[in-house]
Image 1 (cartoon, rainbow, N blue to C red):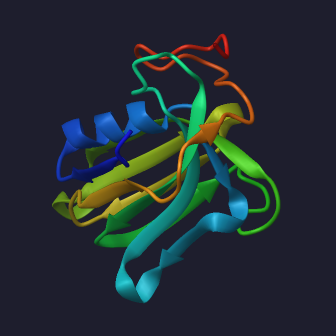
Image 2: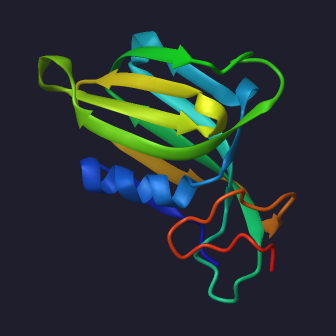
Image 3: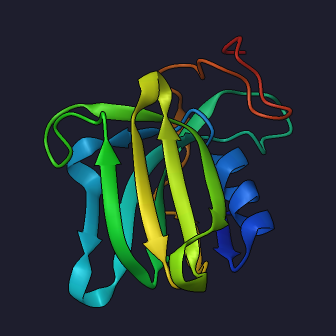
Length: 148
């Protein structure tokens, strides 16, 4: 299986990111907004939904969004600390000043909202797929939740 490498420049691309990262776990210690560089980055442990054989595997994956003007975090206790959050989806809409508002929505109500000049992002596997440590709580489009 080749490492996943995706690029986002519009809402449709972010929808693909949302599908790929559905039920992915994000360690709270592995999130950063680099204000001077206008960059948001987060590491996820995503499920390999693209596997044709249906085996449940996970791989570390980096999400990087550029041209981010500001961030807002809600109901994610300990961001930058211990624990992890489970991503449900990514939603984007036209934001202030003609840019985009990109919201990462997590299980149990947490969110990270990014105010960006435009949609410019990358999603790339950074590790080697291995056996899943857990199973997705909810199925992504075409995904499985039975752990098989």
